[in-house]
Image 1 (cartoon, rainbow, N blue to C red):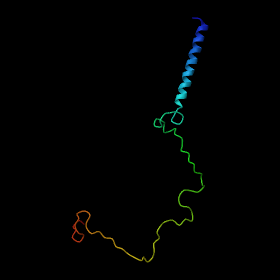
Image 2 (image 1 turned 90 degrees about the horizontal axis):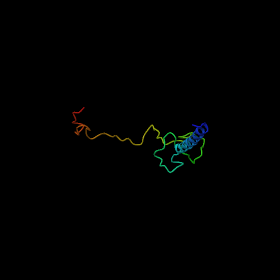
Image 3 (image 1 turned 45 degrees about the vertical axis):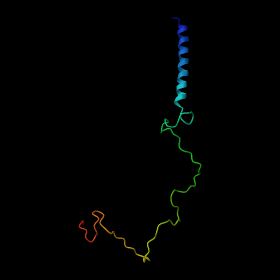
Image 4 (image 1 turned 180 degrees about the vertical axis):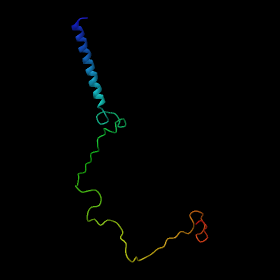
Length: 102
């Protein structure tokens, strides 16, 4: 074989392989944001973080200092006392006075 012909064939083969490599790299970089593919086959590790339109206020989350809050405070002398007692045993259904459950 002629050396010049072998070199020409190898150069042609390299050009074909480079084109194939470029096409595969282009297809590998496709996802639902830059193609018509649905988002389901996208990798969960490469999904971009959601971009919020809200600006940071500089405050920490939760109740802020000085806010009274909705907690009910205990009082020393309540106006009304209500006693809640069950009517029957939840296990056997008998009245509590005659219950032998315990």
